[in-house]
Image 1 (spheres, rainbow, N blue to C red):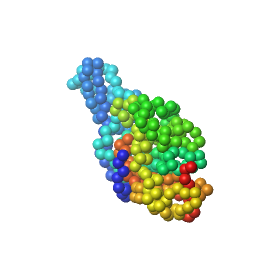
Image 2 (cartoon, rainbow, N blue to C red):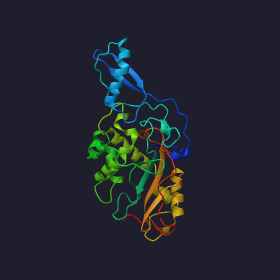
Image 3 (cartoon, one colour):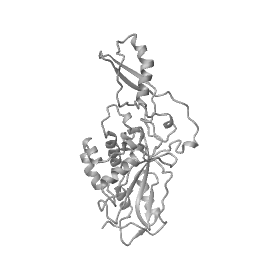
Image 4 (tube, helix red, strand yellow):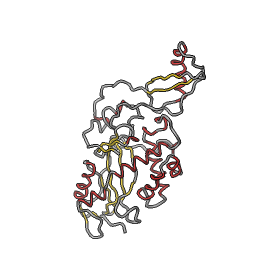
Length: 317
């Protein structure tokens, strides 16, 4: 997991920056094979959510006739079910260059990633010295958001999917640090994947060169967990003298000041009846989400609702 030093990124609110010069159109490379084992590689401009049958007609109409003069291609050819875009120059999501980049190379439209963490005390969830994972959400750059973006990939039995993709250790970690306070961990993971994971464009199946079922699920949860491991909320608060207590209270400025040290950007905190229970961190992703390359970002569209003083940070007991 790579979290780089935060910096100013142009175009956090997409409607407020001028249209950048149009860069050269990136190309996606496709391979054709014939019955005579002749191979041909073709570069075409990428399209979001590529229509494979349509692509086949285009290639058959324009590419194959030109190739026939030099190559003994059969009249019938196959196109791999998974088409991979080449991301030679990764760009930051929500930057001026993201609007023209391939959606397999930078997340769109949701380029402002939030990682919320829970502190649950009633009932107690997770270790007594650690916050727990809520999710990884691809909010839009202006603070709005999409949800449930692909009903065909609203999988169930995520444990089996993750284990089938070699993520048994990840599942074990999630059972401890990614729990629900009112249901099974599995149902919580299902919800987070269906609601938020399906809205990450860079892990759509068409973005993989050799896609296997559930590969995008494994990438989503692995990146979310790796990011969580790099954000030690409990440690940051403890270092500032903010520890769970049944009697002490804290100010929002104390808590937010301590949390700013985690990423260098302001976090957002949530309270219920004056009790601190959730923290949000914001990031841009450099290149595809599965690269795990994050740039700390100011959160748009979420604000703290805790009182200015008298905030309770209760122990898990």
